[in-house]
Every structure is written in C-alpha cells, then in structure tokens.
Length: 540
Image 1 (cartoon, one colour):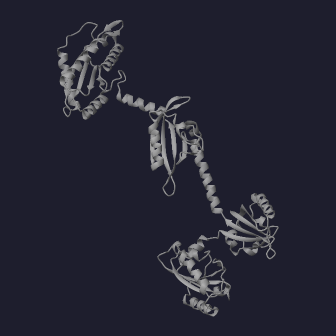
Image 2 (spheres, helix red, strand yellow):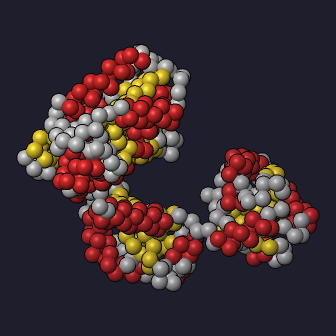
Image 3 (tube, one colour):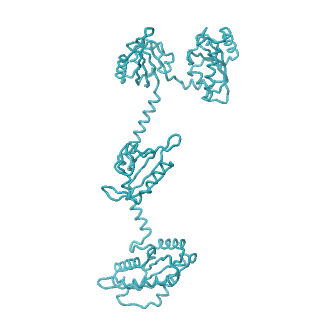
C-alpha cells in the first residue's frame, strides 16, 4: 500500500482513542488485499472481542451498503484512517459504525473496530463462512511450499500443517490418476502457461469437497520457482449439479413409467425431451420439430383446433386441454387427449411447453355409450322421455317461428303382444320408430315416451294448419309401411294428436299435454280393428 497522508504517530493515537472510546466493540485485522487475517496479540490484549467468522468487512454489511464499505476502504488507503456508518447484515434497521486505522508500520495490518454488529458477527461465526478461493505454492514434485492462511477455513488444515506435504495426499483416491495426468500435462506446458482441472479433495474431517484448480507453471521463474495453484471451491455447484442430474433422472424414470406420452418442446417447437411412448405416438425425435409432418396424423376436422391450441400456449403461456382424432398406422382411427402446459423462464417469457398425450379411444367410446344410453331408447333408437322433453324445451327457447308436437299412440297394440308375443311387439315398436324417423323433416326429433307412445318435436312450423299436415303425413307413412309378423303383413295404425304454439307461447309440459289431449280425442273416434292386419293399443 502507498504511504497514507496521516503520519504513523497520529494513526497510533487514533487507534488508542478508538479502542478506549468503544470498550465493547469488535476488533479485527485486515490484510493488504482487504481480507481478514489473524488478529495481532497487541490488539487482542486490548480486551475487545476479536472477529473470527467473517471473511471481510463486506460480510458484516447489508448488500446495499457494500459500495459504502468499498469507498471507506479506498479512503483508508489514501488517508490511513477512515470510518463510516452502515446497516448490518440481517439487521438493517440498527445502524453500525466501522473504523479502519492503518497500523501496518507497527503491526503489519489495518486495525478494524466495529460497533453495533453483535448479532451479525455471531450469526456469521455460526455460519462459519469460508472463502471460495485459496492458493497454494508447490514445487516441481507437487509438494506444498506454502499455502493461503485462509486455507484452514476450507480444508481444515492450517497453512503450517500443509507445508511439506504432497498435494496428492489431499486428493480423493478415486481422482489420483486424473490428478497425476493433469500434473504431467502441466509440466509439459511452456513456462507461464496454466492448466485447469476439477478434482475431489478430502477435508480434514473426511468430507469430500470439489475444487476447480488452476495450476500456473512458474517453475522457470528464477526468483520464485513454483507452481502457483488457485483452488476454487465448487462443492456447492457440483452438489447442485448432482442434485439436478438426480432430479432429471427421476423425472425421466417417472415419465417412462407413466401410461401416457410426454413431449417437451421449446418456443420454436423443437423437441427437447420425450419419453418412449411420446416418440411412438407423435412420431417426433429429440432435436426435431413438432410440425406439419407430425400433425398430419390428426384428422383434418380437428387439425385447426390442435394448431390453434398449441400456438396459443406458446404465444400467451398458460394451460390448455384439447381432444382430437388421429389415425394410428396400426389401429386406425383413434381419439387422443392432449394436456398442454406452458414452460416459462425466470422473467416470465414463454420458453416452451410440455405436452401429455393419452389415447382415450376406449374412454370416448364408453362416454358416448353412456351418453347414448342416457339419451336414446335402447329398443327403438328414439330419444327417451327425458331427452325428448329437453329437446322440446331447447326448441321452444330458440324458436323464431312456431313449434309443433305430434303425439302418436298405437291402436290395439296389446292384441299384438297377446297373439304373437312380446318379441313381435318389440319388432312393431322398432318398425314404427324407423318409419317415423324416415318420415320426419331434418332437424325434427322423434322420441318415445314409453310403451307404445311416441312424440315428434317439429321446429319452424309457421301455422297450425301446417302442423296438422305434418301429423297427417306421419299417420299415412305408418299405414303405408306394413311389418311382417310370422308371415302376416301388419299395418300399424295410430291415434295422432297435434299441438302447435307460437314463439313465447306454451311451455314444453303444456304443449305435450295439449297434444296428448288431442290424441285421446282422435282415439275416441278411431274405428276398432279386430283384423290381424291392424295392431292393438296397450301400455307397454
């Protein structure tokens, strides 16, 4: 350090006054590089508490006050004495004071006296903060000449204990071969060149520590022939890397065990990762793009939805789920469910997405079967009672013109069951349902309320007389289509009632009741038909 402006006698006086003024302060010693060193005996004799834990004065201050500490150090170098108020680490609301006094002329160090850092010093001593970078000087056979005084905080061995020891003795046995190979490579290098190597070392207590060692070949230096080694502690980084590798392995194993396909893509749709199922189902490869070739298997009607979903997630982030059809080269037409989740960087930018795909063909079939059973009559394929009433309510709610309900009740249906059996009766019911489905207009709904009662919901019927013509056409269609029962042609006849309402007129229940009433009026005037060519009416 350059000679400060304040003379040594004044600095000695400043030290004595500061020690006397702050008998409960902490005292430390700082070397020329700004790092703490051992406290000289004279300062220890002042009965102040020595600082043992921190690595430098920066360790005592909050991060925001680090520039202030550095500025104070520069003022010390210029003047020989400097002080400042700062906020301690962990307790920024309670100000502390730092005094720096250059007494290198007498003690070889800069004296540090600091007040208001009781809790901070204790916390740092408890944390046992260790330096990350220490140095060694070695001879041409890798025997330690001397070491950084701080090395005991890193490896547990003092500099004096390491002097004269082979550096290979500090290396983990499993890394001895690499250490020797690295040393031989260094010796073959030109003077002044450096070689870098990562090796495991053993702490004095047996712990394994990782170091990145940069060996500088200075053996040709006539004044100080040595290998100067900078040892950077990378234990935490290596542990984090190993933890990350373990986590990645766990995730890969989990994704391989999942009964679904998993594909991870970046923001440009390049495949970053996929499990085996993903590669088979999507046809992608790691490093390739999820593009047109892979989406070609999606059925054309669903492809725009899949493309839009993927684009929205990669553009806006967030989550999306989509179900679509695709063609499997071996199994034919299938259904898939895709769960798409955006991946983002620390600053919120969309970095890609993870896509979980499952073949849900059987689930869809089951779902459709349950929906069909909940909607349609098993025997006739007509809407069941609940679904028919729901369709009528929806039609009335959306009606822009009139709505008609045609109520159809088979005449003398009981005679069919009694003469030919219930199987024949079922055949008649199915036949009637087919005829009605064939005779109605597109968009009309055919429902079976139960037994031999059918209802047809007709939308967009402008007038009452139009509704009557629709009902007459249905009756004629039934009479014109006989069904063969054990070789005999049976012409189903029915009593038909029709009800019509304007938009915002009758509700669903009232319209059904009105059509039912009209049907019973028609049944009263129906001509009895004992012949086998006419069906019979009865509840079924």
